[in-house]
Image (cartoon, rainbow, N blue to C red):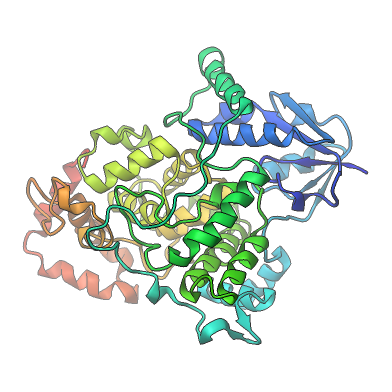
Length: 483
């Protein structure tokens, strides 16, 4: 049987044709020379590769590049980036198979997209649920509704510092993790390879056994309470009831269909409410598949889109994850979470980090690269549409109907950050002006012309005319260096 070359995001059994198929793994140092990844992300990837190499029939090659490691005919599943795909196409003796690790096939997505003037998640998600018979009662959605978002947007419980849910199973490091940590120290010391963020204990699975344990625990203990507060933030509870499955899923350790099937069984058995299960399923077969297909469908030029003309460079404090310099409590805590864990959940990503970057007019491609490098679950395919289209609205609305811009009022409602902050979410000018509240109005003023035709922005834009201090707010935010 021909050996299967597995990239580091293809480590699960569903990337093989049958159990026992011989495997080639390549640990390429050149990947880490090209850009500065988060230290914990580098650790996760190397640990996953080396743990997978303990299986019978697996050959691990440590080399400077992928090309020099391929010395025999191999097959490989379609990679998840254009650069890797183009490399595979250039290498002799390598046969590329269709992609795996996603639910909807490229052919089905292209056929779906060809019939639409606009590409919206909700339309794709409904098609995917119907096509794959997920949370369906015959031809109708389970419970009679496709979308239960309205039940999943509650603020954090009043007075709570943590959600009342058990922590996910702890990761126990082993000798492979010790070896990886020593090698990364040596790379920094001797090879000039740099990393961002802080080293720390491994928080995410690198083996299928660890990943399955976390999936079982989530479905039994956290999924039942996941939905209502999935958009909420608590400074003392970075994980809330989220699954923490994105990293092992994007390493290929879990098949997305086995995840949604496990969640649906919980609903059918009465162990988890429909709203929580529907919200979770939407993330897996809806959003995750959607951004994967958009990465390929929208083409390589999409990453350079900049419909709002955002040209500013990322400031050094943000690029270096220097959370200690930041006074705004929400941004300091979230940026510190990236520095210390390489992970925060989707609302801090979108409504704190992405929102702030968009308000400041930072260059969207640089923001996407920052997310790619600094998140343990970040890959080019993950971050391109997520950041360029959704977070930064740089595509002019091709995948989102409005910018995800919000002021301090939103953060005050959905988190516990504002109470102890030096800034006041109700104030837009002066020494205690919230950088998100003031930044929101400065963003609207700067982009008023570009957003005028957007019907969902009519009311916010009308609000500009009611501000008698708008000019002062804009000037104030133009000179704000660190919030």
